Image 1 (cartoon, rainbow, N blue to C red):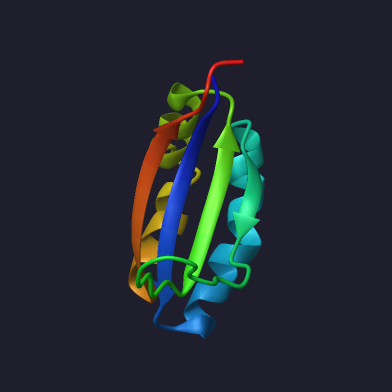
Image 2 (image 1 turned 180 degrees about the vertical axis):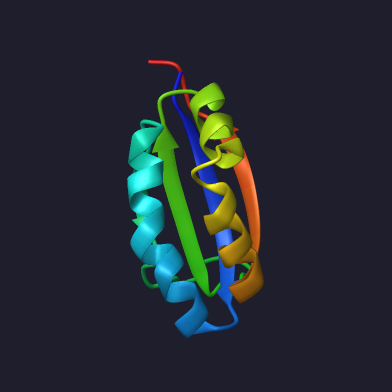
Length: 97
């Protein structure tokens, strides 16, 4: 069953964050993931959701999403992201077909 990593991100240092955005897509693809949303314009239609950047990445399974996040390939990128931004990430299980 598909799974999604949903992230809300506030970039604190755009220059330092830029290499992350360049290098992470290949690692995501290596674990079967693909972007569905990657930092497009955010418009609240109910409530007060002050979000700077939203990312949604689809993976073939929860296990694949967890493997990506825990991978040795992602580890240095994770450190880079954490040093240049604040983020909240969750894994959400998809709907069965």
